[in-house]
Amino acid sequence: MKLRLIIRIAMIVSIVLLCTGFGVYSFFRLNEVESQKDFNLYTLVPQSAIAVLETDRMAELVDDINQLSCSKDNHFLYASELFVYLKNYLHTLLEDTPHGLSKQMNKMLISFHEPDTPLNQVLYCSLGSGDYELVESFIRKYCSSSFPSKFFDYRGEEISIYPMPDGRFLSAYFTSDFLAISFQKRLIEQVIDARLSKKSLIDMSSFKLMHAGKNANVEATVYVRIKSVEMGKNTDGIRSQTYLGSWAEFDLKLNENAIYCSGISHGSDTTHTFINALRRQQPVEGFPGERLPLSTFFYDCWAISDMDAMCSFTAEQEYAKATYSDYIKERDEEWMDFLKRWLKEEFILFLWGWGIVLLIIIFSMIAVSLFPDIAINLIGLFVLLIIGFHVVVWFKVKN
Image 1: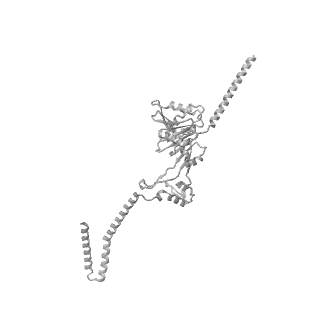
Image 2: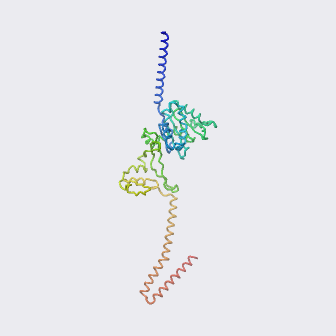
Image 3: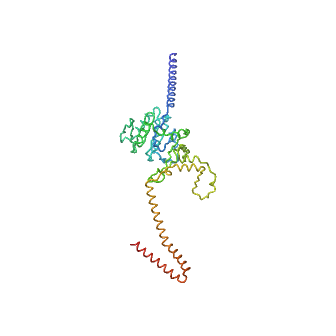
């Protein structure tokens, strides 16, 4: 009896110790995973990116997008083909991860590149402990079996090419720390170049300064490079671009009916940009909107309190201080030659027409004053002489 009791107690103690040990191991393992240093995905983004979408809550963002009215009946925001892939396969991926995506894997970037098409994009994702094997098995599971996967070496790094069921090919570059995928192999090569040369987007001072002030309590953030505005033609020989600013940052907030964007623009204070000129302006009172009639279709009001700042910005532009090119000089010479010919012809026509009439009037006044008796005869003779002179000149010009 005592032996059975001892055996039961021993079994219970063993089970308790085993469960305790497993719980302690799981706790420290999860703590180790959570405390693992996150990989900075921006060290992979090429400096040529024109926009970047960033989120630390990938699964939550996809779920909120699915709740949008435009996502119902398979209507979706097709701004990114890679994000469409992610949306379509995320739930399948979550089925393979009962505890959900890791903290690292919820971090995602999408960079957009020129030319701006749905295919010229790169999706980046951090990988935590065990995520590498999960992603690799997932890709192999759902890629097409029509063509074999291929592997290329680029600067000592491996690029994997996977055929997809829709006939497209997905280029992938991943390690135990990150995953980068794109439909364009050349963009993956640029990712490798950025990483190895340490000349990525985060190494640009303008972007680094902006990203340092990122709001951490948002679902997603979009960074957009502000393009230059074309001024004139390339044939003018003048640098035909005006720089409006550097980057703009937008925090996204979604609900069922709309996507709200709120943000700010960034620019270095040492550069002459239109954004910096606007920063020096103060609100100006006057011409309020309530004075406009109800039929007003469009109303645009600019408050310029510091005119010197705007004039300084204009004076610093290349087109304002550049010298004329040979093309412009030739056009100016042609224009001046045309004006000279036109003025000469107009002057001759004036003398030929109104000048002769004025001459006849003056001669008539003199003839009436000095020779009133024969004034009519003299005027008629003078008119005949002028007509004869015109006939002679006309024949000479014609011949």
